[in-house]
Length: 231
Image 1 (tube, helix red, strand yellow):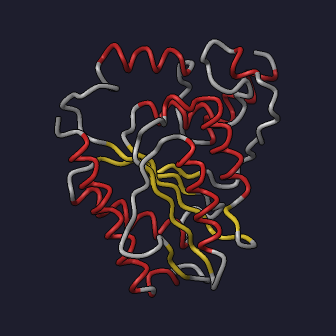
Image 2 (tube, one colour):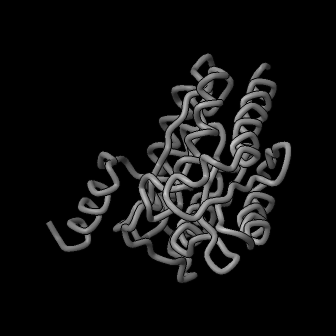
């Protein structure tokens, strides 16, 4: 096993994901089995926690959304990027010459997320706010996923949530939503901007309006998905 393969397998194992097929094979299989067409399978939303803290305030906000999705009959998967290293896009163009096998850097979980998107109907991402911006690792991950595997996210509903101590959340939301708009992904809204407030672990649970915003987001996402897939 060479170093590249060792790093790839180590990263995927750390992410809690099985070693999977190239993206092109996953997409081909999805089309063959009808998973990218109208079919009776349960609707699924992929939620990505962009916080380095596994069970911090961003996680709790996403769990509030996830609970509402489950209550409305939508299946979910919550993926934690944690503190593992994430490469940035270096604009090498390799993904465009890679026979649709995704990003050429396969020693982190960029291509794992892309494959999960192939079998998901919608995407919700959550981030803590750093200097009025999303977590840099999350942005690097999404930029690579969207650029190298944009066909897997096109036209799928999406939403983002931001958790902050005091301010900067609206700027962080704009940064994330702009990617969705470029990928023709319908934005799912709530009763307010998708923001929750908290500093210490668990504080976000005390943000009554923020938690209600998360639940409304879950309801709205479920409603839109059901309408889109009603035939």
